Structures are given as C-alpha cells and as structure tokens.
Length: 198
Image (cartoon, rainbow, N blue to C red; front, side):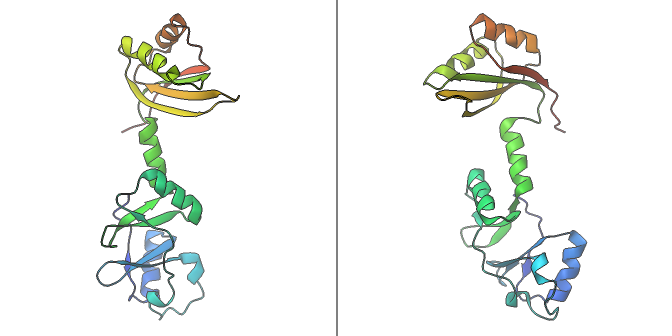
C-alpha cells in the first residue's frame, strides 16, 4: 500500500485543502477524525462548487469501501472494481488510516506475482484440466534445474482445458523447448523476457 498519500483531518477548511490537493495532483480526498480514524472520502470533482469556508466534515461521505491491513490483494482488487474508485483507504484494527491502495499498487502486486519484471522465459501451455497435469511439467523443468518464478492458470479455449503460463529464470528458449518436446509436452509459445526491474 501507499503510506505517503496525503490524508486530511475532517476539521480542515476546504479552501486550504484544495491548495494541497492541486499541489499533489490528488483526485480523492480522505479524511480522519482528530485521532486518525477514517471518517470520510470524497472525489475532488464532486466539490468544485462547494463553499471553500466549509469544513471537510460537511462534504465528505462515509466510505462504503475500505481495506484493512490484513486483507489480501485480491480482496482489495475486487473492492476497487465494485467501488468504481481508483483508490481505497487502508485502516488498522483500530480503524486508524495507515495508507491507501490504488490501481497502481494492484498493478505493482501483479507485476511481482507474475515475475514480469525479471528476465527469463515465458512458456504458454494448453493442457487437459485434470489433477497432476501441471505437476508433470513442473517436475520435468525441476529435473533440469530450471527455476520457476511464477505459474498462472486460466480457463483454456475449449472445455476441459486449462491455459498455463510459466515464467522461469532460464533464458535459453531452445533449451526449454527441447526439454518439453523430449517429454511429450506440447506448448503454444515460448518467448524470452528481458524483464524491467531496477
């Protein structure tokens, strides 16, 4: 989550808050009580015609969606979709705001889960959706000491199949293709991935 996103006290005046909002380029204002507990949220677009002498407490709405620090990233992604917002406040067990999670953090998480930022190879395989089918592929790669960075599965194009995308740290795609062919594993594509990590 983003722990540096500006959070405002509900007692602050709209005029002074909007100056900071423009300075930081924010699209959403999140407010807390004096003791830091989540109290409201409002889109900057919703307050253009408001009286700038009002306190934030007068215009923010109680947040219908927020995350806790212990939520899984999948939960946060589903809440973002349901809320149609770009970010959600994150609170601790005392309902104190500790940060926000936005679409950008979700994408960063996806990048880490899929190892797209690391160099290696990307293997796409369509296989029968049955117990043990994936294990065989993993075992063949492990026997050749090829390290798997991530595995993603999704429904295949036809019923009873599964599409599997495996990322490895091995960059020799001919070597990987040879291992799969040698063991009777047909694949859709194998491509070298440069990665883009720091």
